[in-house]
Image (tube, rainbow, N blue to C red):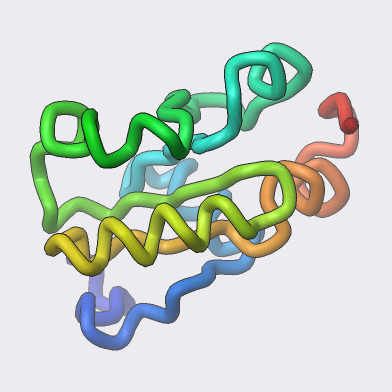
Length: 117
């Protein structure tokens, strides 16, 4: 944990795209994308991993084996990722956060060259 890192119980459910980007650049978090494969094919955040929302319950244990890891979750606009974070936090992934505004806001604020839909 870095000196400015918040304990898991103080982390808000959502994280701003700029803060998420900084964590990813520093190698301090994993990005999970809960959109569907056809959406993923249009655009994605570099380094993110596809885990569609409908498969989170079945695959989270194997794909996210460390419940103490910092997990950032994204979708198109932020609703599905909030559902995923709610599910994850209820099961012990206390450092999971939804990226506010999803990939749409990420494209607007972080990567303007990224395709949008």
